Amino acid sequence: MAQKQTELTQLLDFGREMPPDSRILVAMSGGVDSALTAVLLRRAGIECVGINMRTYHPTAEDVQSGRKFQTCCSPEDAGDARAVALDEDFPFYVLDLEKQFHQAVVEPFINEYLRGRTPNPCVLCNNHLKLGLLIDKARLYGCDFVATGHYARIVENTASGRMEMHRAADPGKDLTYYLFGLRQDQLRRFLCPLGGMTKPQVRELAREYGISVAEKPDSMEICFVPGNDYRKFLQKRVGEGAIAPGNIVTTDGRVVGRHEGIACYTVGQRKGLGITSAVPLYVIDILAEENLVVVGPAEQTTSPGLVCSRMNWVAIEEPTAELRTTAQIRYRHRPAACTVRPLGAGRFQVEFDDPQRSITPGQAVVFYDGESVLGGGWIDQRLS
Image (cartoon, rainbow, N blue to C red):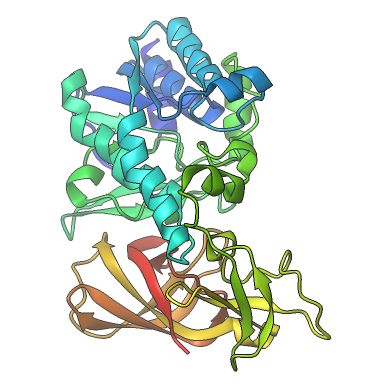
């Protein structure tokens, strides 16, 4: 038994020396990743407490329609997580965060679209609600650390004294882009034990250990947006007149069509514009104060850089001088070489070596040094 526990401990990626007799709070979404995390920790002899965070309660319309949620927050997901905890014999709780979720994620999501920006609710949820809140409150459950099934590696740099966040072993599943906002004190108590594994390895281990959700599909939808139709969601949530139609114009001011409301469009969008043109047109900019959607040909979607703010620096202190690095402006974006220049008051200007397409205000920009996250923030504007 002791040998098996040692083998399992070596399989897990803690990124630091773990104190003996550590007690770990495992965030369990109901999916295979967090389930395997809990099972491996438990069978390695580590005391665990499972917790599922309920952020959305089905409405009467949801129940009547009988629709299934392909998310991480449904009642079915909570049931799947509880079943794993029962099988492995460790305590399990469901934490109702609907009110906090609405304030921290849903309201900003709505407000950003109304401002002509494109929000990223998963970044807000991970950093400020699910992980941020859970790490801050772990001791209420008698736990020293919080573990999740996120694909990332949290590593202690003994030379610098800082906790670092490195890309996961599986590049197709790496989630560091979504986690850049975690503070140093939070990272010291945060574990991603699966960070050194690939998704196929996780599936295979889940089958080997007989985990009931081994074949469960990954969550795909924004958990609070039915059918992933954010436009319909916004129209039902905001007051009459908040989403008003207006003109679609070219970059030189020529009116070429009408839009249904700026909240229904995002930078880089091509389909659904309702414009007949000799060349494909894309959304170049959204001018909220003027209620205009600006369009242009593909070459006008590129920009030499951006301005960002609300930064969190992970591997380094906040730069006070010019910094050469790479920046990722979307989850699936290939990091691009750039120069970062401080502007003061926590704002930075990013100039890319090569112009980048569809830089979108409201999205996150994350800076990397190779595999290591230097830090990140929020895009305020694209440079012209």
